Amino acid sequence: MKSHSSAFTGRSVMRCLTLAAGVVLGASALTGCYGVAPNEARQPAAAPAVSAEPAPPSTTFPARLYPANAAAEAYGVVGAVVTNDRNGRGTFSTQINGENFSGEATRLTRVSSHQGVANSTGNRGSYISCRYEMNSDTMGTGECQLSSGAQFSLHVGI
Image (cartoon, rainbow, N blue to C red; front, top):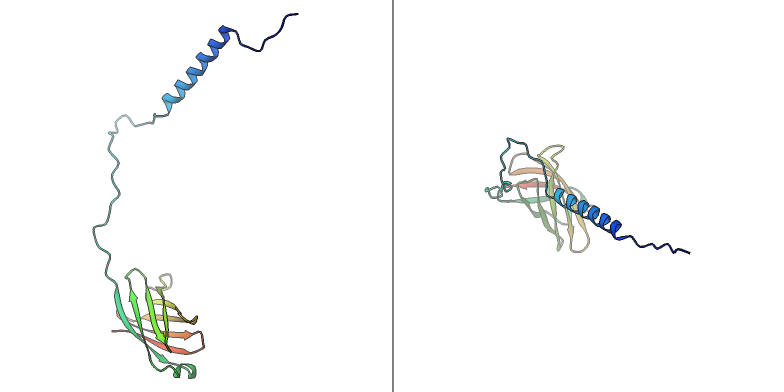
């Protein structure tokens, strides 16, 4: 009985190797190809432009919170500081009854570039939330509410 071997004959092995070599060479030859229009000169890629202008300096404004209800009268007039980074954002900080508050002030550009909100949290867990409107580049007014219920009238400006 003649045994059937699964091994290839020498001739079929050579055919397989030749075919495999052709596939590998063809694929490797295509990996570095890309199309360029015939009249288009090759130019090196330009580096992204970097602005040479420095960011505008931030501006710090004093602010005062005047009591607007009985709960706020116990605190009296409170000083605060608003810092504007000139990009629609800034910081808002104050100290009320020995608690230090710090947070963020943001302009509501969708509504108006003159309106904004300021929110700060205190180091004892309280928070204050304000809404304001700038009447000029350096002056504005608004209202603030402390988490205890105290309400203030906010005056921002120099």
